[in-house]
Length: 282
Image (cartoon, rainbow, N blue to C red):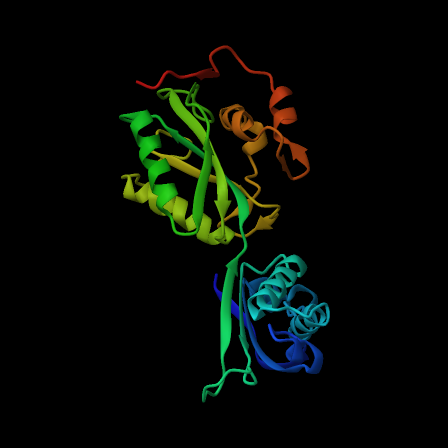
């Protein structure tokens, strides 16, 4: 979701600039602030407390200016962005544009300025599985597609594991793996990317918990606790699935999800024989 909250032409008097006179006398700066977010919860509930407040954006910019002076307006803009991202968890991206019409340069101009955009990066986790066809190849292909998603950086991939079927036992064994990384995507964007990869690799609708060419499940995204008809985060079954927790603990054992340390949850699982075993990839 790319809803935008914005403030335009906010005037702030500050003492920012390279020249000593600028830091003594001060001048006017004009700021545009754009915050990307998912505004559906605030709008559905008509609740001011769930919204990104325009007044707070203005106050944060003024507070950052007052902490100056800064020699560069790039620094000013960067710190405004950092304050907004720190204040509003729902902000996924922030643009700050600063105009400086009184810049002391020998040229005729309306204004000079800078424009900075920063995206919130959050840790994301995926579980992947296949029990049809070339299982390991399907997972490797899905990982390659994940790494190519704009706004997604896969940083760690677990070993591959041979696992027993779950939910419906009269089917072939699976190969499973997990991946974690950083993303600027919203939960629904990350889910959509995962489902599109499944389709690209040839998955078609089938029996629940039945055989599948490829499965790409979004497990968690930052500290997000999220529920909608299409998505629940963290994944509601992840802690009950050894084929998820064992590979996930290999690469993110110290991470906490919903207040639970992944390594501790995994250590407390009772595994049946051959339920989850390391798999030597051909």
